[in-house]
Image (cartoon, rainbow, N blue to C red; front, top):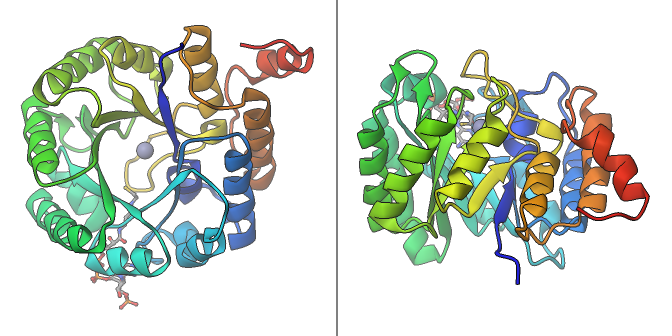
Length: 305
Ligand code: COA
Ligand code: ZN
């Protein structure tokens, strides 16, 4: 049986937060439903952040409430920067929260106006609460490879944060190349050391494709044993507080590569292309996966990847 790789689609959060066009709650739910149709394992559905900081994520409570009662096996998560966001997320029915930790000082300041230590303390406070509430926690380490302000990130810092937060009870740590500056050698090296430290099950990777190295980085992480990845439908994405960063690796490209390498993602690629088309239509700016012009006619002939 094919080995399983798990995809978390972050398009409805990481993707939509940075689009010129702000989608309505109904459109955001429509996009999430199209990902559910394609059988995506888990989806980051929104962010409980200041609407002044990220206007496109306003109404994430309505998105989450609108999804409640969905007959779905998928795991929905939402980004929370502080206890207030945590409480709003849980009140809206979110059972997995995504917190952000920082590989650099300036990124923490730009993103949440905190020092990395304050962001860690905020995350530890939320983790404490999550235990009582039975809520799962995913922690993303932003700028794990390079920060647009502070330069290269020390891998030892990422290793220390990873171990600390796994020990504190996080379900998974996501190593994020927020600005798409990592190269496959660095990804292989950091991934191997994290897998050696903690095993692979609780480590995930999140790549942006700014320098066209997203798929190569995905490959390097897979080879190092990582089996959990973030990706974004139609390659949507970017961070409003990280200048120059473009979208995440497109989910359709990642899935095509993984399937052709013999891995199983559980995802229906035909239906994923429907979701990708929808993301392009709704936003008017999603680039669409690089594989789409080849993939769509190929699948339309009834062939499988
Ligand atoms: N959800 C909604 N609103 C929130 C909030 C939350 N989780 N936390 C704070 N706010 C509101 C406050 O009530 C205040 O509103 P007001 O101006 O109407 O009074 C405003 O946001 C600012 O709050 P303050 O506590 O002074 O925080 P700040 O200005 O230092 O901003 C954050 C800190 C964390 C709230 C803000 O930087 C943020 O939301 N960042 C998210 C960034 C992000 O999502 N980046 C991309 C993903 S990595
Ligand atoms: Zn990102």
